[in-house]
Length: 557
Image (cartoon, rainbow, N blue to C red; front, side, top):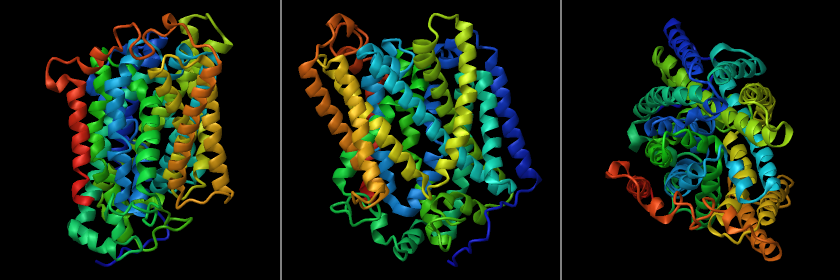
């Protein structure tokens, strides 16, 4: 097939029907925000939806919250840059951790009635650990919000021809409006809507793109003729060394991505866990991430495959700057493949994805800022109405900071690389501290603090050394794999050493927080049981999800 010529700009030629679809979507989003406001009577309603949501709602919101720039723009960019090796981020790098969260960790979170992940750390360790995690989480959320906002601005720029700075401000204002009005309930209900809008936007790109390149067989033949080569069409058979498009071997993939980065993100990232904490009961909370795992398995069909289609249809894709960066793979396909009407749906789907991602970051930020920083260390013992007002102000602050960090993200030609670097810095050491402390009652309070801080610093040193060419890696992503692995190992070693020289907490203070201690909620019986029918049992559903994910590797081994 003739390669599609890359035009001088990404301006999309929308007609009146496309704009009507967009207008209808924005009216609906804001309407949901105003409707959700009527149910907000306390700070718990604003930050945790009053713990009243059914599992199917929280499950779809759980996966939709992750369908932001990281997923759509970032994974399509990775599909174009690294080929089918990108599916590791789903089948090894997401599904097992989501299942583990639902089966093992949600009983601790939900059963202990904590309002956030940092609050769990305060109860398990001490105030120093709590404060460090709260501040680092808040920082990470506004940095990641900037990624989603930057990606949203790219689409607005392509759609309307606005300068990037104006697109960033307008995109931020949209998210700010419905989050500050309706809180987490508004975010969750909009995320459910956005999940289906995103699918409606991405499915036509995949189908029309495959038809253009001659189906799956035609696509694979054309990919082999590019600089990616045949290695881009395999997942494991080319990872015996780093001589593959991803520049990583199977050890880094399994340990760095599949274990540390994956479990660190999905099991300790409050922006995701918050959706499960809003569920109506323990069983619904446990099923939330597992329900989300099933659509997560098949999302690569709508992100990785379009990235490959872009490689073989957009001439010159992969430039360091300009319109032909990998980040623009999806917008370029929209411009070149979709007719009017369908184009409006696709643009709406992309806008929905970025808004969902940013809303998750902002709602996580305002909760942690209000509960874990302001209420805990700045203004204690104020009225509930006071903290509700602080939460709304924190929403504004988070969005404003996100506007600034969006310009940081604009400096990366592949925002997925930037995101993974952030995860290796913030999530990897947190997961190590968390998992050791959850299963080892002897781990002391100060061991929690020092393992978290030194794990973070170890990953930071490696990252700065890589940027300074002191350390060499096959790609940015390989560095993030090893950075995450280093952070995890350092955190575990530090936890053991510090525990040897410091006093552990009394067991009475750890009930419900450490596996096997006292409280009936996180006991082994509850973790392995619950759910009278198979489709309500978290363990059965989780096993099915993992088996499907691993089975999908077989044809592309």
